Length: 115
Image (cartoon, rainbow, N blue to C red; front, side):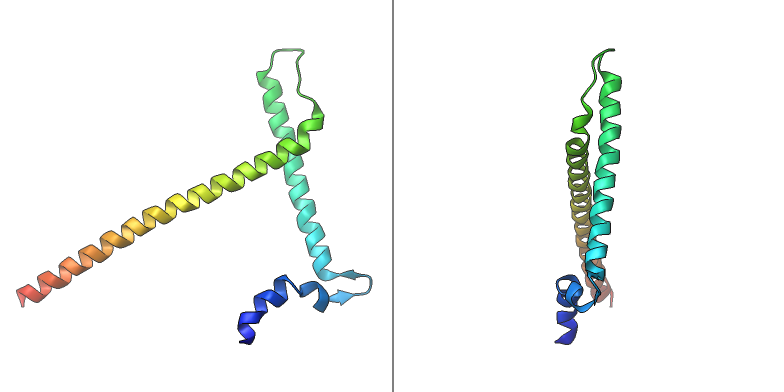
């Protein structure tokens, strides 16, 4: 039973167990993760703004105020794309496993008939 509770302690109660002084180690990890996501969104947003500005005619540019929202939208799109790729791979793997079982059953039947 203890091993089943370990993920809950690590993910939900890790900050309560690892407090040192004013700041908990889990909060530090959470801050670093959120900072990474913010930086990735900002970088992706700048790239998308630059890409859109290349497409627009000269003298017309997209406001840099859209960098963060565009970056978060881009990150969400990437996550959805990755989940789509994983789902497609799952379907292909299930097809391969199904074909494998059918071939294995055919082999067992042929082996039983040959004996």
